Image (cartoon, rainbow, N blue to C red; front, side, top):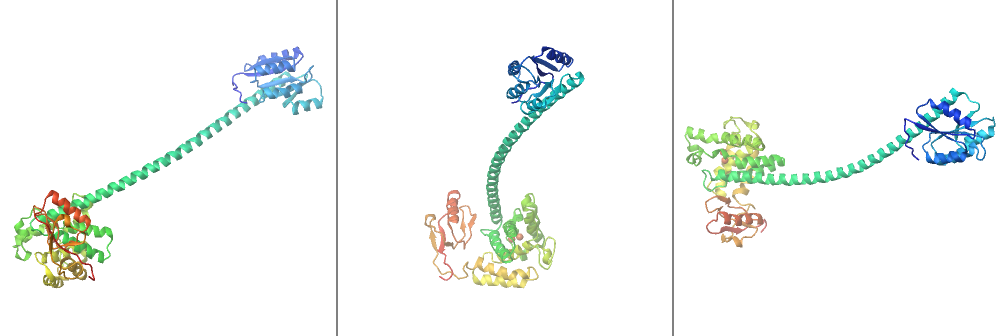
Amino acid sequence: MTIEATQETSKILLVDDEENITRAISRLLMEEEDLDVLTASSGDDGLELLRRHPDVALILSDQRMPGMSGAEFLELSRGIAPEAVRMVLTGYADISLVIDAINKGGAARYITKPWDDGMLVQTIRDGVKQFRLILENQRLSALVQKQNEELKEWNSNLKQKVMEHTVTIRKQNEDLAEKNRQIGESFKGIISAFSRLVELCGRSSRSHSRNVATMAIGIAKDLGLSEKEQEMIQTAALLHDIGEIGIPAAILEMKMSAMSPEEERVYLQHAVRGQTAIDAVEGLREVGVLIRHHHEHFDGSGFPEGIAGEAIPLGARIIAIADFIDREMANQSGEIALNMTLSKVLNQQGLQLDPTLVKHAKRYARYQYFAPTGKQRDDVEREYQVSELTSGLQLTRNFQSGTGLLLLAKGTILDWHKIDAIKRYYQIDPPQGGIFAITARQDGD
Ligand SMILES: [Fe+2]
Ligand SMILES: [Fe+2]
C-alpha cells in the first residue's frame, strides 16, 4: 500500500488505557509542529482510529491493557497501516511480552515507563524519520518502475520507427536508382543526338562519329580497359568532332592534304573548340580532354599541344586511329579500299598513329567496313516495307530520315529495338520508300 505522506505533518497514534499517559505524551509532542497526535484508550479504539487514518506514521502502544494487549493490537494494526513504525511502551521488564511485541506486532523499539522526556521525543522523531524514508523509498521505486516502463515503450516505438524509416529509405534509394538510370539513359540519348548533329554538319550522309565510336570501343575492350574507361572513350568518340559545328562546310569537306595553311589552322581548331563546347558539363570534362587531343600524332607532330607517345591520353590515341581509318574509308567500301586504308595505317604507325593499337584497329576495321561475320555477302538486296521488317535483317544502304538525317548506317543488323525506332522515325520524319536489306547470315552458314 502506498500512502501519500505529507512531509509537513505526520500522524502519531498513542494507545494507552491510562489517560494520563496519553495526555502526558501528547503534551510532550505539542512542541513538535510537524506532528499531529491521535490518542486511543484501547486496542479496539486504536484500530478504529487507524481505519480512519491509515496514513499514520508511528504507533506507540502500551503493552499491558485490558482486553487486547499491546502486542495483539500492534499485530492487527499491521493489516491496516503496514508501513507505520510501531513502538511499544511497557512498565514491566517482562522480556517475553517485549519479544511478542517485536515478533508479532512488528515493533521497532520498546520504551520503558517511566521514560526520559527528551529521549522519548527523540525516539519518536527517529521513528517518524524512518517512516518518511520508507515512503520516499516507495515513491522513488514506483517512479523508477514507471520510467522503466516508459523507456521500454519508447524503445519499442523507436524500433518500430527505425524499421519504418528503413523501409522508407530503401524505397527512396530504389526511386533514386531508377531516376539515376533514367538520367543516365537521357544523358546517353543526348550524347547520341549531339553526335548526329555533328554528322549532319558538313559531312554529307555519313556516320563518322558512330563508326569511330564502334571501332574505338572494340579496341578499348581488346586492351582490357575498365567499363568506365570504355564508356568515356565511346562518348568522346561520338562527340570528338563536335567542334566542327560552326567551321565552314567547304573546309570540312576537303582532305587535309588539300587545305591551305590557313584552312588547316581553322580546321584543327575543332579539337580545342570541341573541348570548350562541352566543358560546361562537369561529367564530360575527362571526355573533353580526349577530344582535345584526338589530332595529336604519336611522333609529336600533331595538334594542338604537339605532345608525343604516352603523353597523349590512351583514349585520344584510340580515337585517332579509328578516326584515321574512317576518314580514309569515307565514301568507299569493299575489300580493296579497306586493304589500301590498312596499308596507310601501317605506314603511319609510330608516326601519326600508336603502333601498339594497329593490330586491334585492323581487326575492328574489318568488322566495320567489310562484313560483320568476316564473310562477303552474296545475298540479294531487297526493299522492305516497315511492316515486313524482322529481327536479323542487315541494312544494305544507309537508312535516312525524310529530311536526310542518317538514322541507321549500312551494315546495321536489325533487332526489335531498332525496328521500333524505325517505326517511330516513320511517324516523325518519314523517309521516302522502304528499307534496303539482306538476310543476315550467321558464321558457318
Ligand atoms: Fe577531328
Ligand atoms: Fe573525326
